[in-house]
Amino acid sequence: MSDAGFDPSALARSVRSLPRAIAASWRRSLQFKTVVVTIGLTGLAVFVAGAYMSVSIGNDLFQSRLDQVLVDSARAQLAAQRTFDAAETGDAVNLDSVMGSARNDIATVSSSRMITVYRVPGQDFDPAAPQDFESPGLDAAVISPELREAVSENAEGQWWQSVGFSGSATGSPGIVVGQRVTVPGAGDYELYMGYDLSDQEETLQFVQRTLFVAGLALLALVGAVAWVVVRIVVRPIREAAETSERLAAGELEVRIDRTGDDEIATLARSFNEMADTLQSRIRELAELSLVQQRFVSDVSHELRTPLTTIRLAGDVLYDQRDDFAPATARTAELLHTQVERFELLLADLLEISRYDAGSAELETEPTSIARLAEESVEEMRDLARQHGSELLLVAPGGYTEVDVDPRRIRRIVRNLVGNAIEHGEGRPVVVSVDSSEGAVALGVRDYGLGMKEEYTERVFDRFWRADPSRRRTIGGTGLGLSIAMSDTRLHGGSLDVWSRPGLGSLFRLTLPRVPGGPLGTSPLSLPPTDTEPPVTVPDDAVSGRQDGSS
Image: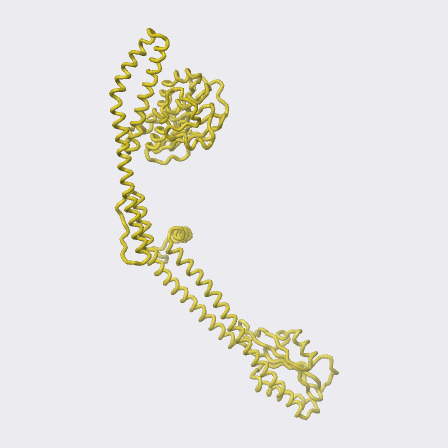
């Protein structure tokens, strides 16, 4: 029966998400990172030390056993040679009996039951000589030809090699020692003795297991110690980070609660002193900013009364300018123009003061951006003609109503179109509106002087001009683009600019369909795909598509 509570798919998802969880912990947790690094370096040190100890112990066990084997085999060879020298040899039966006695002596002295004897090749055949003898497990498959050649060619000395005996299921390591013996009346023989190293291998495996278990225990212990130590250090750091985030969020009263005289307590006191200084400075700046904003607002309001009087007097003079002398008439026109500009400047300053004070609010209502752009274009068409520019509208989308503040959006469009007319050098100005699933975009394209790429970063600064010597031809205040950017941000949108010298500029306004929703990709491309101004555009340049997505 299957377990009703077991969900293989959930287990698979957990396994797949494990690497991501580990990577996230590595990025975010100093404690996790420190513990992992400590365990990793400790594991490397334990591995190197364990490997060195294992190799050293294995070599020592092998060398000790080899020394003992060589001593035992030398004694066994000497005992066998004495048995051969003392025996009476004459017939085959007696020689076989002597060989059997010698093998018993070898087994007794060497403590090895694996004894193999071969007649040295190249001697005259003697029917009475003892035949070759192989012990089980020590045959020609174990004894290499190189060892046999060394023993057969050298009457003196010992020769040995490491081998693997096939007597067990897995095969056990061993040593084979070869020497020469002489049987009187029969000739020279190769004597091989095999020694099993299973006991030494088991000892080495026991040592390795012990080192492995001890290494794991050491890793666990070091990991636990590192976790505890790092936790002691990281906790106040985490507390300081959380306090810093709260300070950055505007909670200027939060402090780190820490006592003692250690380094962490000193850091906490320094942090709290810094927070106190920062809070005091922010309050001073806030009060100064409030005073400045109130001053601008008060001055703007106070100027409205005398400005109204000046405006009325100026209008009277302006209306009667035809009755004045030419110089006086020109003065009346200049007065009228500058009073209008002064009024615009006061209005912009009041709007800027609202944004600086954080009191600007949206008054949203369902609005068709394409229709709003069409109305704004019609209002500014006469101004464009006065400057020799043709004002065109291309709107394949943007007809579906979205919640925006129409007064602010209309002001953005006027500011962008007025800026394009002023810098368009009498060439056409194209206003484009399009939409996508998540956003509505409006672009204003001119083919005038353009700007260097580094200037586009400052084009929304207050009172900034790329060419200070160039005067404003349509009475702008220098605050229009800055206010347009503030209006855009208030809607949660984006206002981008592209410009190149000699190719003109493109300002693109992108607004979310849902207030506060994501913008995604803007329906209008930036940079623009066109580099030349349109030659002819029909009067009904507005597309008939009733807004869906671009």
